[in-house]
Amino acid sequence: MSETRKRSRKRFGGHAHKKHRGARELQVGAQGVLVTCNMNERKCTSEAFSLLNEYADALYGPEQPADTQDSLSEDEEDDEDAEAALKKEVSQIQSSMKTHQQRFSAVDSGAHNVVFIRTHGVDPEQLVHHILSDLYQTKKKKSRVILRMLPVSGTCKAFPEDMEKFLSVFLERWFRAPLRATYQICFKARNSSHSKREEVIKAVAGLVGKLNPLNKVDLTNPELSIIIEIIKTVCCVSVLKDYTLFRKYNLQEVAKEPDNQNTGPQEAANQSTGPQEAANQTQEHGDGEKADASAESHNVSAGNGTKEAELE
Image: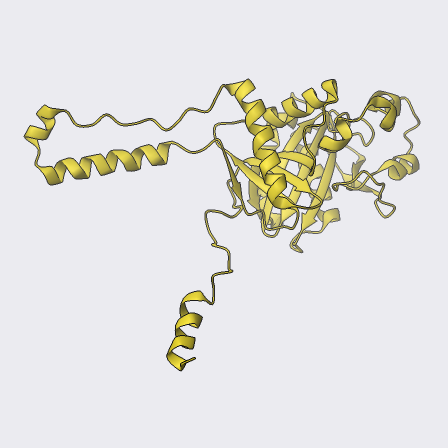
């Protein structure tokens, strides 16, 4: 093989395996659904699209195709030359493409066995809660490889100063006086070393306490769960209802019959919830349901007095 032929192959084919970067990656400002699996991300993505579209159609109606722009009338064509008419049509098409986006689109999450489905014109919290609620009631198993579906209502850079600035505003919707609620903080970081879990949990609890000192930490049966998922340099955030009831939004667990599930939230609330027992009940904020022996309850400042926030 000639040297010229070798250089040609190296020049034009040497980087074919690399992924395109940019718009297809998880970026700050995105909303959507974080989907986890144990294997087969392609199958996971397919199942996620099928499930999200099924329930989105029920909630919001079928997705509408892009609006088509009316072509120029004959009178307008007479008044304009061909070049001007062509420019106008191109402008109309470009405008249509910008205003219409698919309801769901997959982007590279930046982590293994994690798929991010970006949403457009859809409330991810409402949609995923609707899915989990239906699975909880019907006990129908509608996925084979999907483990958990976590809605992502906001994203910011995963650096302490950026997170504090973003969360101080983001959390107002649920915790600012006169609103009040019991809550827990669930944290997980993937492919990132920018933020330490203890520091993040302590900072978030402090923000919630400032919004209303009457907000209280509850590790057993909280009304709201603050979910913080960090992937590389992006922090994904949501505040979820029924997180305990819906088995940490695990599709496999929530579809099981009651006899196969662990103690429900109401029964757990009736049990003793002392600091040591609360620490022992703390579970890993991961894809499985196994207790994390290394997880502990940490004392953090949360408004008036010292409270306990869940370390997941």
